[in-house]
Length: 246
Image: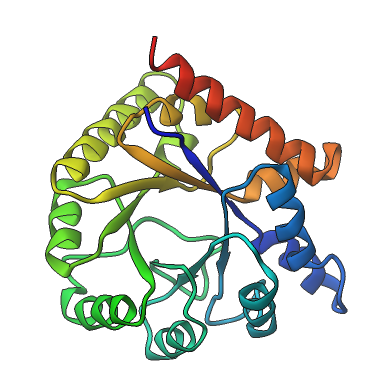
């Protein structure tokens, strides 16, 4: 079974910095520490309201980071222009509402097909790998395939927020979606809300190639340090992935 990649989202290092202003803590330093701790990539969401990651952060990450940068972005002309200018390794198109605390659900690949199609083409032609953040639903996977996106990231929020039998049902939905996405020829990623408690079952799904995790790791870093938090997550992912071979 292929190694499961870990993308570390550093948004909320910038959230803490912006709460007071100034330059500290530095999200670029966090990205470099994540690399040392075993991350395979760095994810950063440049929101329209700039509530955490800033344009200057994206500029620095592009030039100072050795790991691949995955730029999360809304489906807007402004964000497309920024992504085309910086040419990150990857761009994940996500839904975005100004009043939300965090990304709520997957993007509507069906209803927004006319807007997403040109964006996907422009990014791909510019050398950026494109992913769409979607609900684990066949309709959205079919639409992602039709749009020409090579990657989908399955939204794991409902799974992480539920418990007991309901969580198991959400897990089965994700399993089915991952298998279906792979059948379509899509590379399947997953993320949103994953923690030490919830990561292992997702990591055992063989079709999932990458997990993107941020908020939990930054919160855990308050208590144990960022590198230790990431190393522990990496360990749990690797153990689950290895155990799935048994």
